[in-house]
Image (cartoon, rainbow, N blue to C red):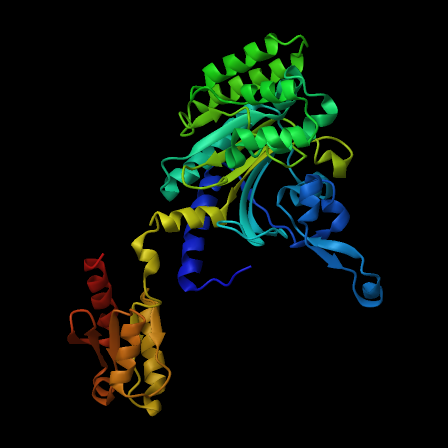
Length: 441
C-alpha cells in the first residue's frame, strides 16, 4: 500500500481517463461498490489460494475479543458486481453493461507490479450468452491499450471446458483436474520441467503428465490452426467429448467476430491459459506483453456467479485491466506524455507587501477566471526568494504586483526561462501568458 505524489497521481488519472472513455464508447455505464463486503460474500469464490489472500476485518465492540471476522476488504470487483445484480435486479436492464474503476485489496507478497492495494479497471456485460460479448470485450481492451500507446500486447484466449476436456483426453482423472490446472497455469513462470514436477506432486501419473504437457503447448500464432489442432486432439481421444468440441466452436465464433475489431491479429489461442479464479465457466482471456512476468489483465465468462446470490443464473462475462501493472510498464518504457510532468501552475503571483495581499488574491482570481492555473505565494518574502521558489517548482511565469502596478491597474510578468519581463494591463495579462505557453507547446 503506497503513497502517491503529484506526478504519480497525474499519471494514474491519465490512464484511468483513457480507459474510462474507451469503455463508455462501448456503452458501458459506471458503477461503484463499497470497499467492505460481508466476509461470507467473498469466501469460496476465488479458490483455496484466493481465500488465504482476503483481508479480513475483525468483529468490533463487544465481539472484538472473539478474534472472529465478519467483514472483509473486497478482493476483486466481480463478486461485488454479482451481489449488486442480485440486490438491484429489478432496477437494472436485462442486458446490463458496466465498468468499475476502484481499488481492491489482497494480502499478497509485494513484487514488481504486484501490491496489497491496487486498482482494477473492470468492464462486464450481463444478460447474454452471445460470443459477441467476448469479442467486444477483447475489442474494448485492445482499444484502451492502443490508445495508451501499447503496440506489442497479445490477447491470450482459452475456454474452461476445453481445459477440462484436454485433461480428460490426456488421462487425468476428474478429481485431479483442479490441482492440475493450478500447475498448468504456472507454465510461463516455472517452465515445462517445473510443471511436470508440480503435476507429479499433485498425483498425476507419469504417462498423463507427458500427454498434458504436449497438449498444452501451443504450436503457432494462427487461432484457426491452433483450434484445429485441439479439435483433432479431442477427436483422437478414446473418450467422446461433445462439451470440448462445443468449447472449440465457441472460441472459433469469438475469434471470427473479433476479426472486425482492433483486437484482430492480437488474439492467440493458448490452451495452457487456466486463470485461477474458480467462478469462470466458459471463455477466459488474458493480456500479455513481452517484458512483464504476469499479465496486464484478464477475465472470462462466469455464468453461474450471480446465481449464487440471486437464486437464478444470469449469463455474465467480464475483463479486468490491472492499473498498477500498466503504470509500471508505461513508466519503464517512457510512454507517458511529457505534459504530465508539468508544474503545478502556469503562473505564480508574488506578494511584495502583506498589506497588498488582497490585491494579489484578486489578481490570482482574475487569471484563474481566464483559464490559467495560478499559485499564490502567501508570504511577503524577498522577491528573489519567491522567484527562486517558483523556479524550483518549474512554474514558468511570475506575476509581480508592486505598489506602482496596483496604482496603475497593471502587472509585470516575468518569464523565468527567457529571463525577460513585460508589463500588461491586468485584464490583458492572461492572454499574453496563454500565448507564451502555446508557443512552448
